[in-house]
Length: 344
Ligand code: BTN
Image (cartoon, rainbow, N blue to C red; front, side):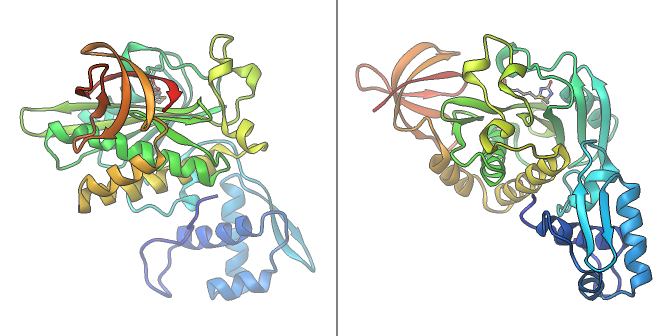
């Protein structure tokens, strides 16, 4: 569940209905399987019982299943699986990311749709999600395949004020955010394989595909595409991937509704993108190093500069991977696939 479900904006006495929905939902989520007393909810909201009933009705209309028991209060029985703005809005505590959400049953690729929307004027933080992608794209020209409704496939439109050369920093910030979100959702040993795969014990949990449209000196927009395996079982992965892939369901041992996963991810993304905007790449780089599964290992690189085997020693100030090659030389790797060979 999102670590903070606090409402955003609005002062005391001026909370919007949505903010009050968020508070009620946050309290019901916190108490998981237990009933929450109606008076407790009224006190927290500082509203009369009739207003609480409106909020409960509003959440039910969004698809949340809430049980009522005369003496005991209210209990959240089910969070809907549907990923749309109505469901996700009361779960979000972000200021910008995901506040406008375009949701589709099927798309060729959420990244493609996000580019189209961005070119048509969509703003920073708008999100595209799809239950199924028919032409999902992965890094380095690969395909990204996931069964309908079992993965989180989303793209975030960003309008950062950084020069195009610094755009790779965003993808590393996003990897940190997704890795932290995954850990909070039960994939505790999640780590980052350079540059931005999130994996658990060597099995891939999530991948990022960051694409940019830029002029010489100015980024027009960035699309941050995320594929995160949520409720896939081992059988859902194709034979050739089964040994090397995992999901939140497999790691945690229980299903987490995708809207909760999306809210958690968007919250962490906003936190790290804001950190990057205000404090630069330094804090992102430090956290990436802590979460990395690549640094300190012998690696085989299939990169733009040709194949290379060596020891991954550091993440450079611009996000390149620093590898000590066979003759002791330090090589900067800016793009490529990494295979972990051994622990050093
Ligand atoms: C990779 O690990 O190769 C990156 C995978 C990125 C997949 C996501 S799913 C949502 C978005 N839309 C796409 O077509 N690709 C990204």
